[in-house]
Image (tube, rainbow, N blue to C red; front, side):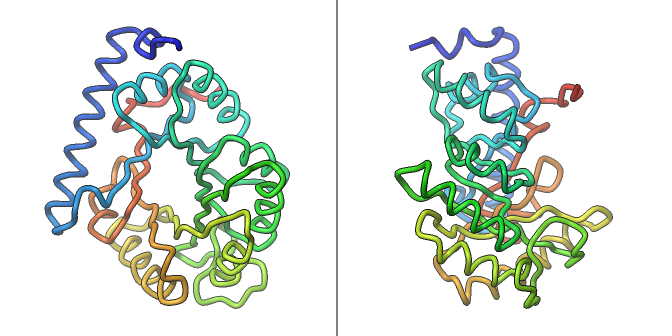
Length: 248
């Protein structure tokens, strides 16, 4: 097995350790402020644009959950990390095209961005042919209900994009396991407004799917607010890894 600590410079590993300590402290304080158990909240390290060495180093520091949003980058990175002997739990959190499902299900443990019946069907088909265990799936919900944005639509009977239609397609696919909801605060919305709305949607959703308790919400700048409104998974990039390299 490759020594994980040799994959990054010592100063980079120290920076990652410091960032991790700060984020963990923020999550613990946010949980304490609203009377939640810290164990209820999973931190996902969002490593898009960062090298595999950072993932290997984070795994050595005890990080279990890693998030990516582009298949081309994520598939290569997951293979490199596995070759180095690190085996984090991979979360695919970006917009997913149906023609990428077969690739994503080969390395992802969780997909956060199912937002249509057609995508749920394609993901279920791919998971059934490529995996020997169910793939966890979260339905991405549109907080503002704008059909032009990504996300299933609450309070809608749209046959492809209605929230309960999408959730039903996931729940009805044997190769998938409906885990819960994911959302991103819409541009121009204050986090308090966005996550209060998400909490309302989640309450109604769980009345229909009580087993689907995961709520993926909150990022580096608003994770405290998201935790206050029930987030079980927070997706943290820059607060943990520093400013992102420029995409080429």
